[in-house]
Length: 73
Image (cartoon, one colour):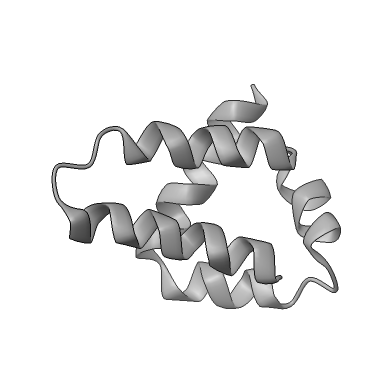
């Protein structure tokens, strides 16, 4: 299911520096989305699902930064 892939992507992007570097090798955000297998709505849903689990501002800030990073690709 695509939302599962989006959640996995978000979790990996928050913890794995090498994974983020691999993402930078894509020529565009759309290429990355096609490669991983989800769309922008599913990505946004995955971020929101992680945000509601956060118990501190610092935890939420990590996911907000991942959102901004993804949108800048």
